[in-house]
Amino acid sequence: MYAWVTVIVLVESGTGAAENTSDAQLRISHDPSIARAATTCDAVSSASRLPVAYARRMKPDGGVQLVDVTVRYGSRTALEALHGSFAPGSLTAVVGANGAGKSTLLMAVAGTVRLARGAVACRARAQGRLAFLPQLAAIDRSFPLTVAELVALGGWREFGAFRAPSPALWARAEEAGAAVGLTKRLSRRVSELSEGELRRALFARLILQDATVIMLDEPFAAVDAATTAALLDQLMRWHEEGRTVIVVLHDLAMVRAHFPETLALARRCVAWGATEAALPAIAA
Figure 1 (cartoon, helix red, strand yellow):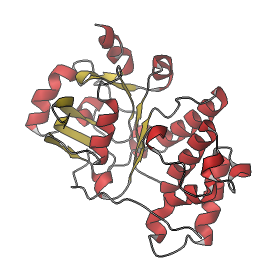
Figure 2 (cartoon, helix red, strand yellow):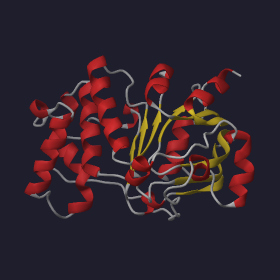
Figure 3 (cartoon, rainbow, N blue to C red):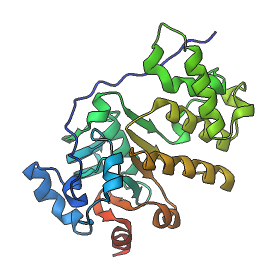
Figure 4 (cartoon, rainbow, N blue to C red):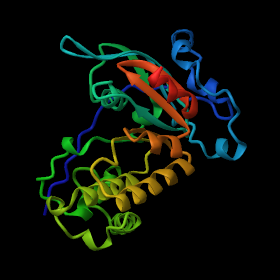
């Protein structure tokens, strides 16, 4: 019998962007300070209208707004003066060299790193509807959990620290495991999984979490092609369901093929907008 353990982060709430507005309007807040500062990085963003069917799927509380976001580790600046917003229902790749501030950005949005300056407004985070999957190096695999128990933690809000998961939640955990190809691994210890299997288990946990905003830090690193394809399919399903998905990636070919929006970082914003316009700005 294992104890169920979680970490609760208290955050401030923010307002989401309205539905049925243009992509450019969704990205830049109505706050004048955001609009002014974002123009240098927002020049490549698309101003085309979102398709009606897509707009209907968007979850109105899925917006993430950044105002002058700056993060420092001691004397080193990891992220500086980032302005702009992720539109509700958007699918965005975050790219840049090592040390560009990509992981720091996700931690800033998740509220797990202190801001030196600025603010993050994310209604989903305040409501407990934000999911953040860090790099595998940040995950302790020695904790004695089975795969099924790890997946079931995605339903933490339903049972908390003092109750066991319900039979219905266990059934959903099995369904989530099956969705990522782990039906025969659910009774194994997490420590026995390969890198690819652990990635699949963590994606299954995210399925159960049912978050409005999903952030993934290099989710396809060090996994085989079959696992990458399976996880990418799940990522696309989240996007089709209208969830806001933000993914740190190094594979620019994958970004071009699957991600309509890209944020390029070099501690500051280099480009943020439609992928076909943002990616060339990296080499400019």
